[in-house]
Image (cartoon, rainbow, N blue to C red):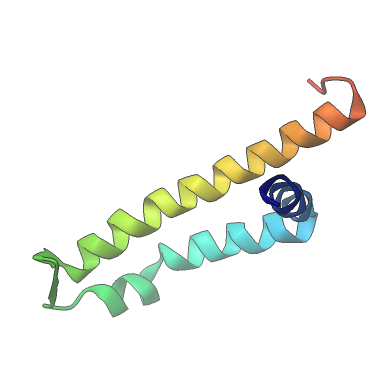
Length: 84
């Protein structure tokens, strides 16, 4: 079951629209409105809310980039040649 799910997700990430959507989402999440929303004097797990937002959001965006690179690798493997 997992290999089928994995291939489905990686194929969906190959779409140009998904690249654009995640790029814009990343810019918006690290820009003024969201930073201002999370810049409150609130502690969650003994961390300020803004720090927690950045500590979760940044690795999550890195993980999405990792998934995109895996999708590109899958496309190269299926073509049978490496694009450089």
